[in-house]
Structures are given as C-alpha cells and as structure tokens.
Image (cartoon, rainbow, N blue to C red):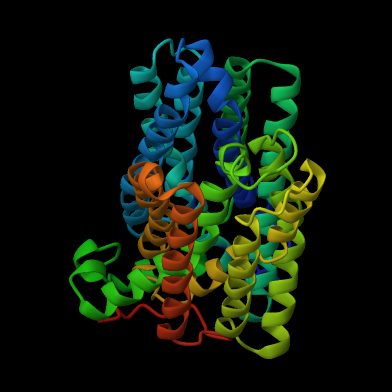
Length: 414
C-alpha cells in the first residue's frame, strides 16, 4: 500500500482538511453505533422476546459487553497504529466494525446479540483514538483543538443518521445501513495521508507501540490513568444519565415519557457548539487544563440539577440535556490526551485511554444495578456522579499543561 505523507512540510495549513473529514467519518461511525444501540435497545430486545423487566438489565449487559470489546480492541488497534501506521490500522478497524454491523442485523437471541456487539466494539475501538492521533499529528499546535473540534462535529452526523434511520426503517435495516456506511468509509480511506511525524519516527528504528513502555513505567501509567479519568465525566453523562434517562426521569417527576434517543440527539447536536467554545477558550487563555476544569464543574452543576425532583415537562427536560452539550469535554480532553505522549506511544495511549474512559461506564452500570434497590436510583446516581466527577477534577490537576506542545519527538517517556 502506498504511504503518502501529508504535503506542505508535514502539516495542513487549515484546521478543516482532508484528514479531518475522512478520519472524522470514523467518529461518525462511532457515534452512529453508540446512538443506534441505545435507541434500538428496547425495540430490538422486545423483538427478541425479552420482557420489560429483562430489557434494562440485559440491555446494560450487552452495552457493557460492547464497551469491554472496545477496551480490548483499543489496545490492539493502538499498538498496531504505532507499529504499522495510523492509516493502516484505521482501515482494519473500520472493516471489522462493518462486518459486525452486518452480522448484527441477523441476530435472533440475546446471547448472539451480546457476542456480535462485543465484536463490533472491538472493531470500532480504533476509530476514535487513531483518528484523533492522525488529526493531531497533521496540523499545527495552534489549530489542533479546532481541528479536533471539526473531527468531533462529524460525530453529530452519526447521531442524526442513526436517529433518522430508526424513524423510517426497523432496527435490523439500520444495522445494515451502518455496515454499508462503514464499507463506504473503507474505500474513502485510500485517500488518507499518513502522519509525517509517524513516518519520521519509523526511520529512527525506535521501538514503537510497546505496552511494556506504557504500563511498565510508573510515570506513564499515572499519566494514562489521569487521561482515562479526564474524559470519564463525559461518559457518565452520555453512557449513564442520558442513556438511562427514561428510567431516571420517572424518579425525578418528569411530567411525561422521555426517550433516550431524543435526549442523546439534542445533547450531541449542541455538543458541537460546546467543542468550539472549548477550543476558543483554550486559545484565549493559553491553557487546556483550565478549560477542561471549568467544563467538568459545569457538568457537575447540571448533573445535580438533572437528578432533582423538579417536575419538568419533557420539553424542559430535553432543553436541560441540550445545555449539557455546551460543556462537552470531548474536544478539549481529546487534545489533552494526544499531547501527553511521544510519537512512539501516542496511538496506543490515545486509543486505549479514550476507550478505557468509556469503560468506566461498565463500573457505573454495575454499581447502579447493585445498589439502586437498596439506596434508590437518585441517591446512587448522585454518589456515582460525585466520585466520577471528583476523580476527573483530580486528574486534570495532576496532568501537566500541554498548550502549544509540539508533537514531534521519538523519545520514550519513562
């Protein structure tokens, strides 16, 4: 396969470019998959014969299986991205995802459903971290957060397509649409440039993509853990509060029926604005950490409001979900993560940490299912939010400021 470096001395001159567009379509696939499952959770499991009492527990177990697959897949694709290149790893990732989505359309029992979703999670795991790494390595530092914001904006289209598809076709057909979109993206990725920074590292012969370097060093392990926790509050919102908004809203006296797909759709739509605000603030204050900290605190206040018994109407509830989007952490946190590690570990660390952040949802779900009967839905939601958001703030405090940091460098951080 022909490996073409980015033109113009290795960097694009604009924040929105070919790499952002094509790599961003991977985030499109990621959000499409996440939104589609959460939206089709009830109708698909009902179609498979599960009762109302079984749907919440089984749906969460299947979702957690998918996230577990993503955590395992993130290590595989991340190492591959550091060893053979970001572009080649992205090609493999989207192929596995596409085959999995096609298979998802033909499941007829919950066990097979769970296995296929695990396989899909394994495949889609590479999209976010590898795409983030490739985008970050192909633009100048002053445009990095804006480029990743455009990258994240592509995810909104994934939500929109998933939402629209479920309004007009059944869940099985929606899965086929997802698989088809993935195969189309596989073809488009032949146009991608490889990162010049990565290609320069290859020439040095330096060891790349070593899990021993990542997890065997106390300093690297601490940095990795902090990177995981920085983005965890975002997944507490999307993977817990909004994903379970139909159930949680019943305990907060919302005057009507709430749909998770609408709650997530309005959140993701407004999140684009939140990402641009975070990019602008980051440039204005010359700080990633300050903006990330402010956004985490904003989410903390909104989460506290979310679980209060305010007797909101469905419209007011969805407006609150939209306001959450203004404090979306993805662009600023994703920038912080890719700026923490050298080129030799960047794909591995970025892909793994972003997916392990998502993996915190598994622990959240387990705690929720274990304690909701004893302590109540609202109390458990509050305690979980306090722990996750508190750890997120501590993690931001522990990480060094990376504003303006060059991503060139092949040394291994120890």
